[in-house]
Length: 399
Image 1 (cartoon, rainbow, N blue to C red):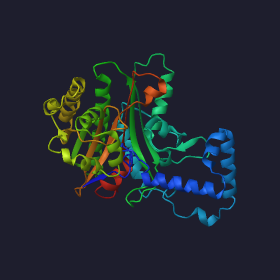
Image 2 (spheres, one colour):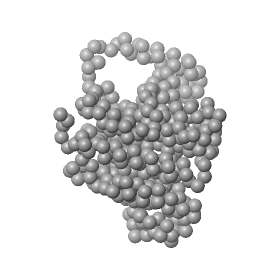
Image 3 (cartoon, rainbow, N blue to C red):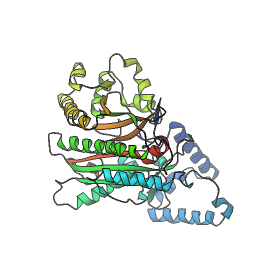
Image 4 (cartoon, one colour):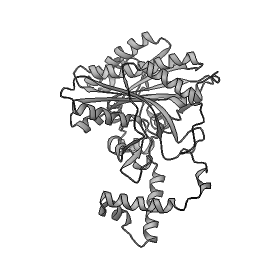
């Protein structure tokens, strides 16, 4: 059984966190009821379209002040998943984070703000605004550290006269995710260790190969270092994929994006496999030699060539350095199909109880291209769940 990490970019997908159809329908129903009760059928439009930003902020702030005036002291100590402290030892998390920074020596360490500009997740990642904690001002609480680091990369690269050099950042960051988790094993806020690499398309797939290799190598080195702290990681598998190749295979077998969007959920790790069950005999899931095993599908030659480059630079090269790790290509990866653009990866690991977790995830996105208005920009983002590692891979308490 595969468990999605309680903090490994849960509900995204990067495994994207999506508001379900039921959630969206419920929100719309509540909005209509409120509008009807107030005798203002176009209340949402009035607030969203007819008020200026400053007017809306003043109104919401005034409402908040009135509500705050009625709050009793006893309400402040009521349990809430969003405000409750993390139940892990802070020193343990700090120790793990320090090791993470040590393994990411090629990345500049940054400390992100707990806030992002309002709409950052929606505009860049195309994810529903209902999944982030929006404030009454023009901000939202951080829900993905790669968003904050992307904005920082864009700000820095915008000031450069020559962008030929890469911008590589890393951070440990606590995030808040909505909807609130129903599974008691999940938490509403948690720590992630994340990497981003921003650079230029220099041809020959060079930047992509190097960035992907560096991110994966960093996470594998972190897992190796943590073994000295009584963390147990068994049967480590790096699953490479490419959303362009998977999209081509979907086209070959007549699976459209609407069917994927309706059937595949990041929180259900088996949803993609269920959709592709009827093609299991025709469409290979795990591939180790893409040029040979995908030859019959008449895929674009440049995509097959790039998979072969990844086979050499990652599977063969990194495989010789991390001999206890298996490297494969997953051609059934449907999660992230509308999120990543090109190469992406999962790192899946079993704990001492034999449970399989998707521990790290990453891939290429087009965010800096959009922010800088430059199609030559490339951006690799990834994250690994640090709290989830403490909860599920630590064999016994630290001294």
